[in-house]
Length: 160
Length: 298
Image 1 (cartoon, rainbow over the protein chains, first blue to last red):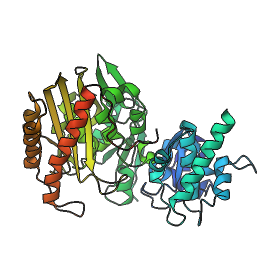
Image 2: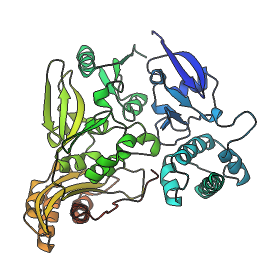
Image 3: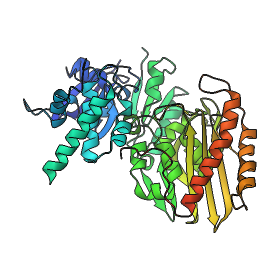
Image 4: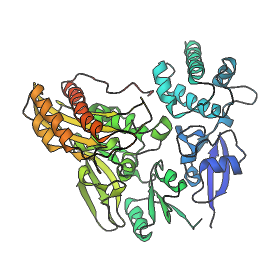
């Protein structure tokens, strides 16, 4: 089967890869590019563990075909920390123990960042609805929601 | 795995030609939130996947004299962010924004929701109530069809070989109009409608001068319930008119029994939701802002 050559940008870095026409973006990220931070939970868009942004839009990378990344800007969990400097959401998740096994955590972080980039003053209800497509089966949602609320409050504080 | 082709169409006609050339094995890729799941489940093995998101006509919203044309592949999130459309057709927009999670909203489209042909598709009852027109491109010609005539049954559309859905057009209507979509689900989010009702009204003072009602998840396809619209039209939306319209909705139901709801329950709820959705649509027609569902994060 003829491979498709894709030129894209991942976490700011120009990237090229070859893929099959029906391969998912998640597959390529994990299996070919070594970016294993995005997790495969369900593979059907239900769990959000593979959340990434494509051209700024939050999506499940398991429901994106790899050839669709052509010319796009993809952001994954790997681009969230800047070197050793964690993103405020990552720091807060650790401080507030908003994770347990960690499988869902990259997806929650990527999704939470996409929310806070749009709205730095979300209500608890808004956060819960925004993150409804991210499933966690061990920590429970309260700690995650509260961590996101704390980071939002800090962002508003430093924006003053 | 068989040889799958991936094509990016640049024009609507090119997409239709690719569909025709694929001889029934072509699949349109808009948001892919149904297609990729079906491929993974082995329900669908496309010969050619045709990405239509690079076709300008299929991924935007344009307004002409109060009428809105929504490109069939426009992501639901983009539709939800369109302030003028949200103000003009709040029921249609909230129905589209109920489909799946934030992640799914980033990809899923109204055209895809329609073409997936689920009887429980959330956007379709609202589009039926709105009187939406579907624009369809074939290899040679373009045609239009009212949205309620588009689907043929569960998973079945009336598209002919080589035809694709290009856009959905919402007609212009008087300012004193309002619409609403309500669905019943056992949870508060991320679920499939047990029943869904779309209502669109135009008011003149306290009198309803025109109405359309779309009813989902209670028959093989989403229904236009003309008897319910007739009961509302000309009335002041008084108790008798609402009783008659609710009964008309229940009478139109031909549901199935399944794990999400029984025939009896669905039939009853169709009437309940008609009353609630009518009240919201009427308030909106009078300029009273009414959220129908919990506030989402955008």
